[in-house]
Image 1 (cartoon, helix red, strand yellow):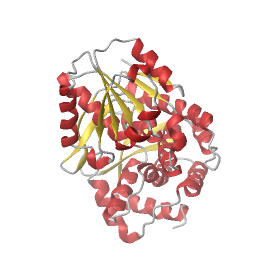
Image 2 (tube, rainbow, N blue to C red):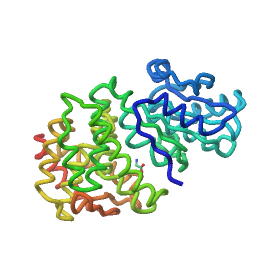
Image 3 (cartoon, rainbow, N blue to C red):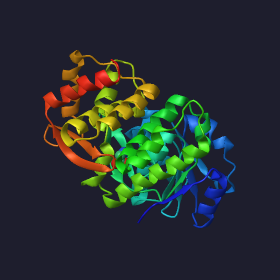
Amino acid sequence: MAQNIVFSNDIEGTLDNVLAAKSFNCIAVIVDDNTARLVLPTLHSSALEKAHVITIGAGDVNKNLDTLASVWTSLEQMGATRSSLVVNLGGGVVTDLGGFAAATYKRGIPFINCPTTLLTAVDAAVGGKTGINFNGLKNEVGCFQEAIDVIISTRFFTTLPERELKSGYAEMLKHGMLSGHDDYERLLQFDFTAVDYDRLLDLLKTSVLIKEKIVRADPHEHGLRRALNLGHTVGHAFESLALRRGKPVPHGYAVAWGLVAEMVLSHMQLGFAASDLHQLARFVSDNYGAFYITCDDYDELLDLMHHDKKSQHGEINCSLLSACGDVKVGNTIADDDMKVALDIYRDLLGI
Ligand code: GLY
């Protein structure tokens, strides 16, 4: 069943309407340290007045089994049953972990996602991937379970630092490239120096619906959903290398740089238009700068790509485009081709 996605900047009214249409014996709101302090007090929803608040630690380090167990315990203590509801109010850690807690507590109770970052709104909150990190591996344990409702508002984004906004925007860029040339062009026109939040909400709606359409066609990621990994094979390797260097980069920035490298591969292997590649490189360079690498980093980057979750038999695997809107999943990439792509990535971004 398709999840109900509501776009509205009247978040209280929407929450009250959504909750009034259903009947729950109790409601738990899951927040992290940040949304407990900065978002929850600004939400004047009558439906949430009597809700139990469960606060977890902010940040990916807390997306673990201990936190999950603490949420289950809180749900148990408040007497939650299958007629109860969980409302996840926060970023990706809250929606991933809160969704997994709800999906597994008493074999599953319903939950609603209210993403408070652009990155979460455009990606984690939609599509039913829930889970936690385990044994040092990201998202190692989890399940597919969709929120019954996702309520998306740009109201929360107005206070986000520019870096956070741009991080989410990179995933929107990815969706635009998967959708077609018109969507891609529209996204390239966005001006981060004077953010228009109404315009952003419009672009976000289109973007979320692109993801939703892909998820609907392949909810459990057997084929087409792997298209959503565009930019992520190289992006994850950059992200991991940055972490090893002790200088983490925002996920979306790594995706933006990864998109450039993977569009080079798309050009080399599937004839993706050089003009579109150059346009992308310009936009990324102007808004995200570049991830600095030299050829001395190639072996480590390739090793990371060979061990990526998306790699099936130890080979480097990427989703590529022959054109905007025309994706081919499951491309095996030879090491030498990846090295050429990284050379050209460095040229395009002026490294
Ligand atoms: N983040 C990609 C997906 O939801 O499949």
